[in-house]
Image 1 (tube, rainbow, N blue to C red):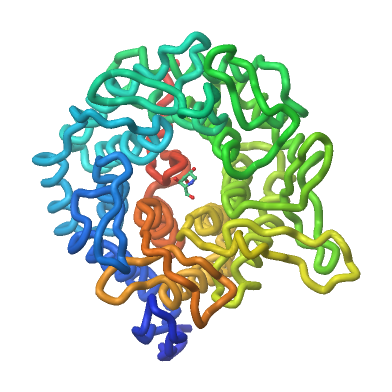
Image 2: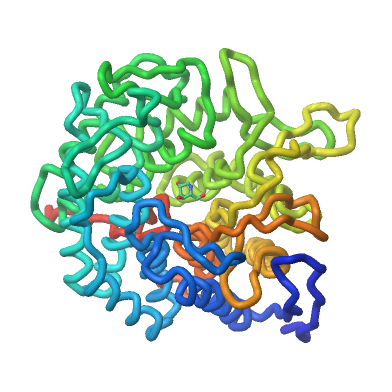
Length: 480
Ligand code: DMJ
């Protein structure tokens, strides 16, 4: 039964003075996500059109690579939400304005997951060659990154000049960055019938597979582009710099029709490593969480980024992997939900520290420097997977609460949503004046899919989502 909509007054804060309507029916929820998207898009269109990111408070824009990041990250979301007019306008920009023939340094990983991934998924959803042509052009311009002594790619490429280099301060690349570009490059090879894209990224996976320095499948966070060896050994996290390595082991295995045994082997071993070294429970309420390991010392710190893991574990279990992966997914999803629920704004901070002592009453502590929220998607991403596989409505309700909190504390009058400084201060959450492209590309897309009753909409048996929420098809098995 539908509850009667109530009007809720927003707390006084500079980001939002608009009263929010609270409703609970599925259709209402879908429309509420669409409204949120339209509001975010309005800000982008009015003040940042064709630029990378909206700065909604100052009503201006920020440039990172100068590739229209938010616009491209949003294309498939608009298509999925049926926002036809908005999509048509954005497509027109891609056709008329988007060029990769630019003297600009771009980050290989960010450009691959957001731009190449966005173009490939939009091509699949629409069948429009324009997006494939753009993807091919970009893919070929990213290839110089792989010309290194070790074949581990550099972090940065100049897509106009065809040169590549590591960051100024090191010759290391980040583990997650070199192992989370594979879904996109492999798909580009399949579509173009040009093997070089797949070859370079498969080579990276092969090298990492046999590299010493792992601990029960857990990998260090950096790899040197000259030597091809791990550096900063002995430090293990499922958060920043390592997260999507684990995600892409499973997803590449699924993409390729579950035939590439080394990927599965590495994934299964890594999850055993996570269980053995990183999973613990809090003292007060026995919340299960994933901490970090530094030279055999356990640190009960968890990035919000780690909240991708329950969704990935559930996807693995759905694909025939051990049932205890699903049990862990259920427990971790509860913890990620608590990371929102226990904050005064209902929004998770970037990093939490869990309490292992039962003498204290609090499960979660947040350091002052970690209190920001960047509109990240990982928890709603996991809620989407968990709902699809369990049909348990609590996951939808948790997602709905998160959307309400985004509306209450990050929505900017006139258009756009903003990152905030302090999830513990509902009176002054401290708008940061930045709307990340992944808010439209990922966060709102996963919320929409969470509330959609259409289980065939991007079926998880037909598509695999890249780490920026861009779906690419699972490859058809070759005829026997
Ligand atoms: C996104 O760009 C991707 O999800 C990436 O894997 C992690 N960081 C952001 C979102 O938080």
